[in-house]
Structure formats: structure tokens, C-alpha cells
Image 1 (cartoon, rainbow, N blue to C red):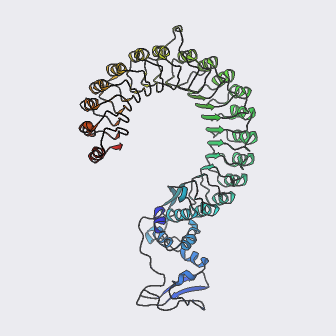
Image 2 (image 1 turned 135 degrees about the vertical axis):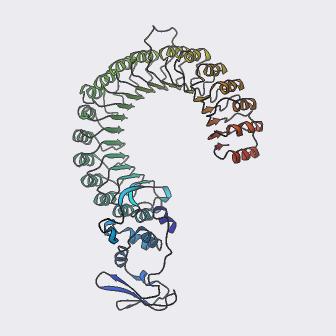
Image 3 (image 1 turned 60 degrees about the vertical axis):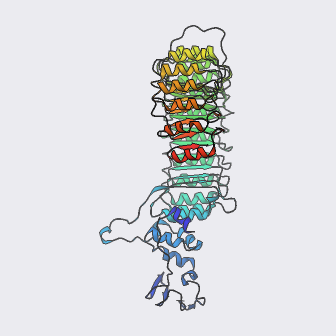
Length: 636
């Protein structure tokens, strides 16, 4: 029990002495009608009974204070002037901890020195953060937190994740936090099935400074609990509700009515939240609301139209799994032209996103900079190009599992965004396949700095060569999982990059050879900082020699499952680089004990080393290496 309180309270405790021990008699006032008297004695054991009024305490083995009712203990505890005394008292028993945790911060009598007559001895401004998870999430733990943090700046943020299956967090535990931590500003409840409206009522009654509320998988919380928060916490700025099956439109309407400062709302998997709640929220908080995230809700075209009309302050919008929103709804959202400030848009699995609606959004969001479309199966090349032409400020474009988009659409979109586009990412776009002939010449996208094409099996060397001509100023290149590309497609791209590549990921590009590494070292050795060659089995020791001789800035190198031997590792250790911090040799079965000296030499700068599945390195050598490279995190 002391460890429990110490974890959330003061770091140092005084030894606990009985309230009835000492060299002289002690008198404790209890209210205005009773006193506890302890006679003087020479020994610390209880030599005689203590009297409470006319009641005789016959058992001389039990400290007399334990026979007092909770009301008397409560009054005594309110006179404990500092956190050390409270934490020490809380260590005595669960009962004392329970009584102490029921005392509100405002009910403790403050003791001031003459010099501090106008200054409170303790402050509860909400500086501390606590998180309890799984088996540690109990009411007793919350009581310890309430007692221990009350005098150390006050609890500002509390996260409860999961709950003890046998004695988990209940409404009582949340009530204890409310009474002891009025400075609470952020509360997160994730998968806490035993907490309901009663707990939120207490939070609403005591914690008027609450700014952030996060509710996830709390089935007992209903509209009543959320409405209580709304009515008593006017400073609420952020609200997240996920998988709370008993929260509906009424609770969201209360938030809209009483929380004018709300600037961030995220709602997911709440079947009873529909158009009435979302529409009232957007229309009432239009001046403050900047971030909106709606996932898997039963809303219709009406809600997204309201977003388009009233979302004049929205800068970040995420819409996912809105199956009841049609093409018309998204088209109206763009045509309303209310999303003037929108800079980031993410749309996932919404069948209403078509060529027509995405074109409308492009024209209706003039300041859009970051766009992510996932699983938008009805968007084709026509819609993508029209969208790119409409959004003149676009800086980042991410397409994932948009299978109707082909190379022609990608290349034309790149050519349309020649001024500001900085980053393009294509992930699992199955419609991309190598073209038989080259398309007509397009304007290069000189602003593009980052290109990521991952796990698009149809993307081959022909497509890559075309992209290289359009992107002469790349800094970051990620082609992981492109098994179809060869040296012939990648080398022209590497040679066309004029400003120097800094980060290159070629993992699982199994057809690439060391010629690519030679080109990287030759053309980009002076700027290369990260290189990932995982599972490129045609990469050999000669590649490491080239990197060692030409890449002084290289700090992250992944050679997992490459054809590397001890000779390559030794060559790498003799290189000109002085910044290598991360090195992975995982699965390099030909790296043996002979590489230990080279690894120790590189260990002067290494912070992370992965030698898992290097079966030719003995366990004894690994132990020695671990001792010598004490600064380095070694995976073996």
C-alpha cells in the first residue's frame, strides 16, 4: 500500500506513529461535541484505554483512532496541512485512504506562515499527468492518485485504459478523482465498462476546468452524462466519442448548445448519432470548430452539406465509412464554398466520392494543401486530374487502394501541379500498370520533393522512367515492395535527380542489383542520409565499399537479408562516414564472429544495431559486444 501511494504522491514519507503515542497527553478536537484524549506514558505501546465521551475502548491492541467513525476521521484529515502528511496517513490502511480520498481539495485547512499570509501554501493548477492501464486500473489506484497529486501541482490529465476484470474502475473511483482533483483538464476513458453517468456527473460537478474529454467503449455512459459535462464545463475544447452505443443526438446537441469553445470533435461507431446531432454541432460551433472527424456514422447528405456550408473555420476534415452519403452530398459540400479555410482533407471508404464530387471539392476548397483518398473505388483518372487542376495550393497527395487510377492519371496530375506539390504517395493502387508506349511530353513538377510508390505490383520500370523525367528535384524516394522495377528503370531516375537524394527506401525490390547502389554513391553520396535495402538479395559486399567511400552523411543503413559477408562489414567500418547511428544486418547469415572488431569500431557512433538471425555469430561474442557497446541498443 505505501508503494501505491508513493507512486502517485510525495516521494518521501515520515515514519508513521500512533496518534495516541508520545511523551505528553494529546487532545484532538472532533467537531464541537467530542474529543479524543490520549494520556501520557513512557512506552510506545498502549498501556491504558482511551476514552471517547463515556465509551470505553476495551481492546488495548488496537489504536484508539481506528475506532472512530469515518466522519471523525474526515474532520481530522482536513487539518493535515501538506501532501506528505496526507500520503503518510493514506499508507496506514485502505480505510484511511478511502476517507482521505473523499476530502475535497477545498476542504483542507490551509496553514500559512506570517510571511505568507496572503499566499496559499499549495497550488492545484493541473500540471501532473497520470495513466493507469489494465490490471492497475482500479478504484484504489485512483484514490491514491487523488491523494498523492493534490499537493504537487494538481492533476491535470488522467488516462484510464482498460480495467481490472475483478475490481476495475467504477463510478466511485471517478468520483474520488473529481473531488480530489478539481484542476483536471483532460480525461480519457478507454474500455471502462463499469463507469456510467454517475461518474461523469461528479466530474461535471467538480472539474469545471475540463478542456478535453475522450470516451471510448464506455457502454454505460448515455446522453445524460454527456449533457452534464456540457452544462458544467464551458471550457471544453476537444471531444472524442468512439463506440459509445448509448450516446446519441441529444448529448451532441447539448455540447453544441453549451460548449462554444469546442474546436475539435471526433465521433466514431456511434449508431445513434445522426444528422440532428452533427448538423446542430456544426451550425452552433462554426466560429470555433477547426478539426472534424466523422467515422462510420449513420449520417446522410444533409450532414455533409451542413459541413460545407457552416465549416468556415474547419482546417482539418476526416470522413470515413459514411455509407449513406451519396455523390450529391459531397457535390453540395464542395458547391457550398464554405470550407474556405480547409487545408487537410482525408476521405476513406465513402462510395459518394466520385469523379464529379471530387472535382466539386477541388473547386470549393481553395486553400486545400493535404489530401488523402483511401479506398475511393469510384474515382478515376478524369476525377483526379480535374481535382488537381482545381486545387492550386495542393502540397501533399496520398492515394491508397484507388484502383481506377492509372499511370496516365498520376502523370497528368503531377504535370498539373507544377508550382506547389511537394509530396506524392501511392499505396496499393492496383490499376497502375506499365504502359506499352510513352505518353506525350508533360511539364515537369519541379516542386516535388518526396515520392512514395509502395506495393503497387503493376508499377514497373517503364512507369518509373516516366516519373523520373517529371520529378527532377526529389529528396526522398520510397519504392518499397515494387518487385517489377529493375536497374534499367531506376537508374535514369537517380541520374535525373539534380538536388541530391537524402532518404531512399528500396526494400523488397528484389530485382535491383549493386549497380543501383553504385549510382546512388556516385550521384548522391554527398547528401544520402538513409538507405534501406532490406531483402535486396542481389546486393553484395561491393555495394558497401561504394557506400563507405562516398557517403559521409549516411546515418541509417538497412541491409537485412542481403548477401553481405564479413568483408563487407569490415569495408563499411573503414569508410569515411562518421554519422552512422542505425545499422541492420538482420538475416545476414554470412556475417560471423569475424565482424566483431568492425562492429565495435562503428559502435563509437551506433545507437541501434540489429543482428537478429545472424546465426554465424556466437552468443558469447554477442555478450561481449553488448558489454562494449553500452550506448547502443542491440537486437540479437
